[in-house]
Image (cartoon, rainbow, N blue to C red; front, side):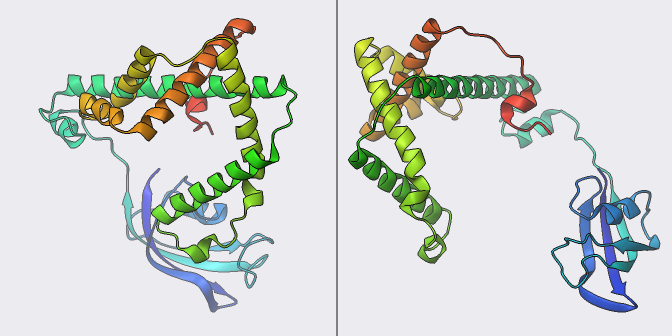
Length: 275
């Protein structure tokens, strides 16, 4: 986990090759950014060390000129930096935005954020399982016209998102409706199924449910009440919240009809960060 700053020079039969030289390159030992043999050579070095070692490139290495060949590397160690954890104190809390530097308040905010994130991830996993079960249990031919409309909507939404991230129209030439057709079919089919389930079992979103969902969502903002008021002035946003409540109602109904088994899961598995 130490960060090593090095100058390096690689040669093949005494001749430098493209990409084999570098100045003040920084790498964290153990992250796997370098080839295993190169990283292994960094273990144990100290500042101002000079070291030479052979390195055999993999046969499938992206640099064809050196793939499968053995090069000789010379490195000079400019610096070695060890990671250190900061002290958890008022200054640390201030750095995280806690105005008065209250460590207890900081811990409470972090705990609250983690609990909300865990709740949201669990709900999403459960919702995905319920939606898959509804799809698998329903034999339904979806209208082609609805699929085409949803496909176009997904395409346009993706293009708008990419444009907002700085991509230009040339970068999106490879996007085609066919890329979204399967997703569109799923969404249209689910929409029809959910509509029938909501109507047949009277699972419409109630005002108090919508309010509770909004308040829960707003807790991640600095001024929750202001965020809730803003939502109530945005009809499109309110429709999105109502749709989420409808889905939650369907999930609750489905769980009442199904055999439910709890599955233990680590935090890393839940968050999708397990190694």
